[in-house]
Length: 226
Ligand code: SAH
Image (cartoon, rainbow, N blue to C red; front, side):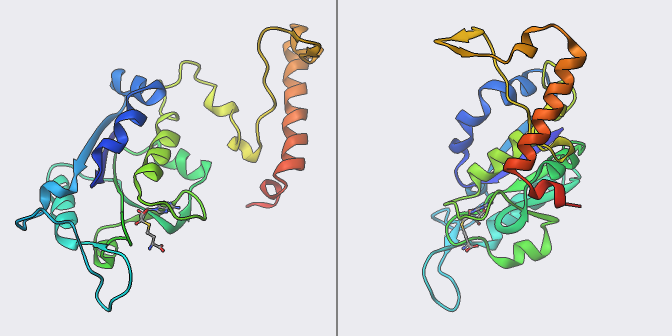
């Protein structure tokens, strides 16, 4: 998968993408991430990317031209399955959307900042708008990093244990069973006996029951969905 992220703060992705699973996915050649600095496409003298809002009011708005030029430059070389805009008024990100996007070949993700981006960008170029929650962030960068992580870990070959992503919460509309590791007894706090039994069938059943129990108790809404 090729992923192009458009931002005015490229440095914000350095830490997030240089460690752990996203790093491994890049090293293995399973994902090719490119960060485009929108400021490089500003044609004005001071490389400005934001301006005052028409009609007045607080906050600056990201200008249409640098973003349009950046998108068009990338589009001239690659055809994108989706051009995504991170936005609090977009569709809420869920596991289903991550699963769906993980099958794409080329994705573009645009990060807004300040008061947002000129609406005409959304009308002309954006094919999908995604929110990571009902709260407002200062910029789309952290949201794009969250989206990227949720997608990349689903690409076949990225996780060592192929079945691992499938047993995570929200796959099958369930949340995950609790997990434990050594020691089996920590200051009297014991790991459930069944997990030490070596009986795979019973362990599987226990995990299923726990997952169901937890979903009912913590996320009853997952049962009502669909
Ligand atoms: N004025 C806008 C908020 C702008 S916040 C409004 O009221 O809707 C600046 C940028 O941060 C947005 O353009 C978007 O790219 C990003 N952003 C903020 N909150 C987000 C969220 N919950 N999910 C995804 N992106 C978000």
